[in-house]
Amino acid sequence: MSYVISFTPIVAVVIMSCIVQFQKEVRELTGTRQPHNYYVAELAIELMLWMTYIIPFPAPLFATCLNLDPLHSLLESNNEENYCIIEFLFRNLIVFIVILDVAKAANAFFIVGLMVTCSTKDILHDLVKFNLISRVRPLASQYLSDMATLGIWKLFDLFVHVYDHKLHLLPFNVSIPSRQVYLQPKTSKNRLYFLKFSTLCVLTHTLISLTILCKSICAKPKGTELTATSEMIRVVRIYTHLLMTLFPPAFLAMSYVISFTPVVAAVIINSIAEFQKEVKELVVTHQPHKYFAAEVAITLMLLVTYIFPFPAPVVITYFKVDPLHSLLNGDNEEDCFIFLFLLTLLVRNSVLFIVMVDVCKALNAYFMVGLMVTCSTKDILQDLTKSNLHPSLAKRLQEINLYRKMFLWNKYTNHNFCSFSVPPLIFFGLSVVILSYYGTIRMAGKLDLVFYIGLPLIALLSSFFVIMLIPQAARVLENAEHFIYTRTSRINLSKFERKTWKSMRCMGIQVGSYGYVTKNLKILALKYISENTINLLLTF
Image 1: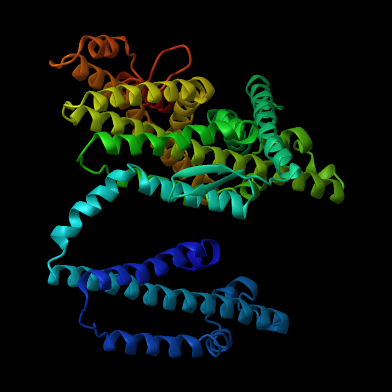
Image 2 (image 1 turned 180 degrees about the vertical axis):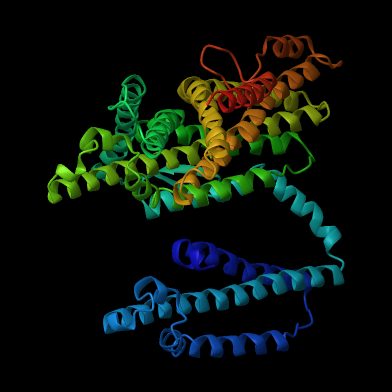
């Protein structure tokens, strides 16, 4: 709750604003409704507000006087002779800030939670009481079918808000009601130059990592005998360089599109809503498509990738496993002047931060845009396949025209994005999955927890692409083949329609010059990951 208030306050505003709108619509539907009393809840909230308002002021003083605060052991270590008033005030200040923030979050969580749950319960109770659920359900089904990836659109809007309004690293604006992505009309040149600089910085850093990695593997360590600690540091350094060499290229194509050709992303995404609008005219009724697992994965990915780039550069430079350490400092830091040391430390942290933020931005954009394109295309083809043959010739010709437009859009998407972005994603992405699995298993207990915790996070996020994105991309080709087959095999078609459908080609997600993503790719990917992970564990 504290994170939401501090970093994403718009989420709380949206949640609270929707309650009033829903209650207004329910009042219009039901006419009159009985008031709902929550006297006990109001009393509990009032009591909590008074207590949490008073406690943060005397509590820090009592905690520090009785030496019960955690900072007492850290700063004083029970040495009363070294007692300092500055340390006492510092401990009081830290405890006061922590207690005040926790009290604020506790009150907000309790009040917002009660408002959301009680309001939702009361609205459903009123609708059930006035026998309106049966009449509202078709409307809700129609609304859900209007946009197959509405939840992903909302998360995409959150992604743009975080990386544009907070970090100023995206040139887009999102409109959820119209399901459109717009290029920002007045983007400063400095901002555009920085976006391009970030992409070039990722490319340069990857090449430096590759060079230093080859040098570390080929060069023999100095000295005839190595201690276990130095050997472990060398292994961890090589492993980190390997990850930093393989991970950024997997999403470099997405970073290039955002920085150099952002109009391509806008054209690809904006066509989805138009296609779904035409499908709604052709298909009378169809079941809503739900992607709860994908939405949870996107939410988790947004949260992790937003927090991860801030502490990670400090940790990596502290353990001296970043590629620029070998390039700028080497192992002779004690011979450097303090000013030069601080300057190189600042450069290493800054470069790592820019690279990680840009890679995380591209990772989120790739995952969300990929799911929006594949899920929407798959759902449109699935709905058209399940629909009956239209008796009207105009409707059947409209269906042919819709598939032609979707095929051209798919060809544009493959030519301007998929053909050069999917191959590196598969090659480098699978390599990162294997390395992260290996590191999570092999280095458990051998690394500090602060450094080790990044390995399972990388393994989890990279697995989302294999588990979710590849299957959805494969189903696009399957549904297209099945849709064309159902149209060519139906009777009562005119000669023109049958020849037209037979001349149609299938849509799919292109993998460079290797063809389309198929169902076999998922099986091969899982086989490749399992076999190579086991081989690494048995070899090293």
